[in-house]
Image (tube, rainbow, N blue to C red; front, top):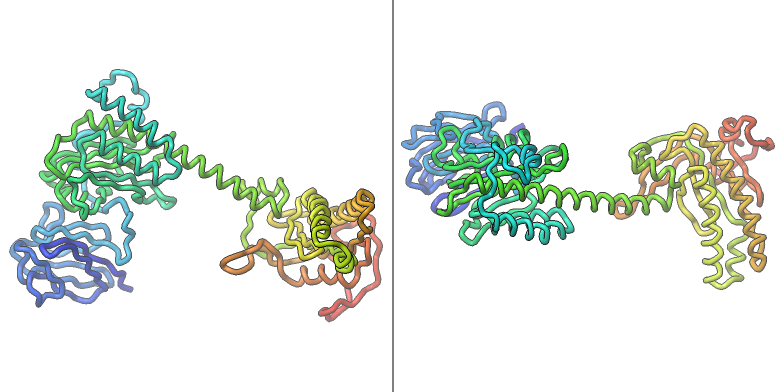
Length: 512
């Protein structure tokens, strides 16, 4: 299947974005061509696009100024995403049809030439405050001191990653003779994506900022800041085409490092006639990178703590503290699966009639007080609260924390719930005495997040659940705990029980 690509370029008529899906197309200066490029360096019939086994190619058809990859003239070559080449004097970027606009790198697969100087960040961290033979410290102490002051005010007050990144670029534009820059962070798949970019008034707002993958890889893998200068004269790495698709005078790039982890990069460059970037400037960007890294890590830590707190509060409504800890630690999963569990149904007897005799606020007060205690007994056995349904409670044991003894846990919880109800009645003599039926069944059930796209609940479904419900509603008497065959079998002799005569259940073909 042909993978679509796009060709992005700018000619005298402006920016162009051409989608190519595998059909043969011609490129030239005249409107007779499928793709018209209006530039004096383009021939009337310059090149053609075609596919071989689904792979797109471009071929020179006898043009005057040819096709160039870097400084090498080519007659024919495959077009892969991220490639930058020239048609005459026009730079062309090969991208995906729906390529992410915040991708921070261009694939160039070219040598690391054009890097004038580099600075190992790990060495810099060790040598801060000292004179080092490997680093040259910033000559302008005033700039450095102002940078520290502004960084403290700007970066440490950032509440999210984007705010910190934007503040970092603003600091770089104020502290260095540069025209534009961006901060890119490494995502979960190891790709760099821009989270903030800014330009000075001198910079062209239409220019796309994308860094050469060769340079980005060097910065990240070697954990070193680099100074790139006089990119227009490079023989094998033409920054005009491979780094930013236009001529730049000089550029700086530094890694964002915290501990052993590289978070991303900070990049700045000059596109207009200005003070050339020097090693002193590389030092300043390196220091800024270290401060940005600390600020980013602080934001991530704060967000992580807030997310864990939110997650704990959400889980604590349904799970015991022990199980919450296991879910947070990844030792118990909430994903949908078929598991052997024990399901418990508990229902208050005669509560509907009672609720008709009490004011609404008294009913709510009674239920809240009662369910607090009943839920504590479920959590004491590391059970999972499924839901409250009116005056009924549904819980299950054995998920998400896998428990071999889920049956005995469910019965111990049920006995404790009946004991709690007896104590509750004694503690509230002004309220009518309450009684409760409980049914428990063990077996295979589907456990997972079930519901609509707007709301899902971690719940259980299946015949095991239906049987537990019917044991409670059709068999159990007030004050009793009735368990199914499989639950009774797993209890063995650990809890005293009385065998009942087989009873028919609604919807069941045989008695249990």
